Amino acid sequence: MSDRKVAIGCSSGFWGDSAQAAAQLVHSGKIDYLVSDYLAEITMSLLARARGKNPALGYPPDFVETLAPLLPAIAARGIRLVSNAGGVNPRACRQALLEAATAAGVGLRIAVVEGDDLMPRIDEIKTLAPVEMFTGAPFPGHLQSCNAYLGARAIATALDADADVVLTGRCVDSAVTLGILMHEFGWRDTDYDLLAAGSLAGHVIECGPQCTGGLFTDWAEVPGWEDMGYPIVECSADGAFTVTKPAGTGGLVTPATVAEQIVYEIGDPAAYILPDVVCDFTDVKLVQDGSDRVHVSGARGRTPTPTYKVSATYADGWRVIATMMVAGRDAAAKARRMGQAIIERTRRLNLAAGRADYRETSVEVIGAEDTYGETGRFAASAREVVLKIGLRHDDKTALEAFGREMTQAGVAMAQGTTGLFGGRPSPSPVVRLFSFLLDKRRVPVQVELDGTATAVTVAAGQPLERCEPAAGPDEPAPADAVEVPLIALAWGRSGDKGNDANIGVIARRPEFLPVLRRELTTERVGAFFGHYVTGAVRRWELPGFHALNFLLTGALGGGGIASLRYDPQGKSYAQMLMDLPVRVPAAWLTAQGPLARYAAGDKSTSVKKNGA
Image (cartoon, rainbow, N blue to C red; front, side, top):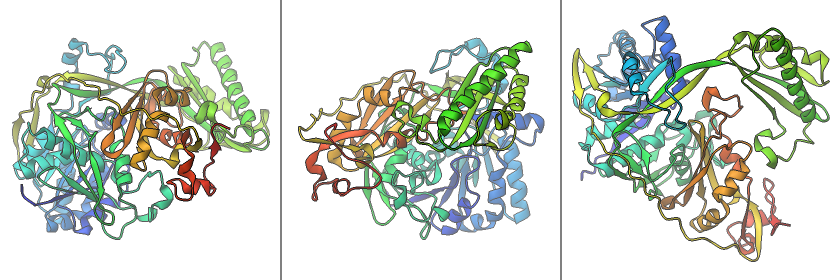
């Protein structure tokens, strides 16, 4: 294969990411392509609402605003752009970008990928009666948005037609990178290992600096937060790639920072299902290849499935979130009593007015470690906390009544209350996610460029055959065991898969993996999050870089904006798990042992002798 490399930078991991990232990557002079990701499930609903009010909207305006001043430099350097910033209105996004290009004196050929928006065909889909793929719930009566997660083939088709810019609606986040590599290297739809490798490259950079030191467990080792470097992947025709960032920027690129991003929100690492390929990341290898450079190889792939995942959103009542600070002795106890009293008072008032009871209530005392459940340590000693009350109701008026009455807490309840954050809380609509599978043959995809529409042929696929990989050998607990916190042995990263939480745990050294396997059983991890988990806990291994991946079913209180929790996406779960005590040989804490710093009295952790 050719030694030619294709360099791809990612400037946005979500709608609202840094407006400076695109300029950093463009002016680095190190990229051939610039990709960006703007869409999440709730974003689609917001964009659909915006398009309903104005047919010229329905895409993230940040995309055009960020690129407009960079267009001359982009043109001069020959950089091509691929983004899902089309939202629910790719043609309107194209028009806005064309106007910006004209103003900058730059000519652009902009292709749009269409077919993901299924709202015009919703009556046809209803007749199929699809059920929610995780819960089995029936199809909702009225939707706000309905979009299929398209793959990379259409993007490759647009680039093959010499588009300078490719705008998509909903596609899987990694497809913007994979489509480029399919075009550049001529990868076929049946080159499954290559497609998996390209998908992994896209997955690593799709969240921006999350792979260049952002959110890293060892945060104190990461320099330059004020100017974080955004990621670049230098990709080869054989599927291997190197992760790096622009020179002189902040951040850190190591096997650990890249590994944390690989395990982020992937579920089963041997069957990470994407429209173009089913990926197997279990044997991926990560090697430091110079300062802030990590070489990645070893992804494998197999035949894709015959269905697209479709994400629909629908209105499901109203919610309100209110927060206030409570200070002084017994702050946590005061806050909890206040929260329950306000709920009971407003419940009584609503029932007296003929309104129904709350559908759901939530009281969390932030600062008293409520998110840790029974493993929390400091509830009794906390002297300043934040009381959070979350409520859900079908009637907006009931939550407005709560907002008026909550202010009474400042004079009628506990001393030390300092007032509501952000003033009197206002109700907001609850948008709930409904995910289902739809046969790819029912989703025609096309690329439109210069007024010509080209139908895209998508590989049919076949049903997935899951195979449970054999776990590694059990490691017996040493007779002279001592306990250290999990963070002594591992890095971790967590996120959401709908209403499920995903936690990846990576061993700091290969010899630590058997200990993690023994200590981090599904039963023990489930018990640690027992105050949240409502379903099963699953565990998989990634021996290629000595990691475990967990899926905690039903752990997010509904997930996303449907949840009343402070952490509805499980972003803090891995860091909480890092406090779990694990047993290691006492010799590991000697002066020559791999955990010597804990024997020396590491201030951030504690060591216990064999359960004492």
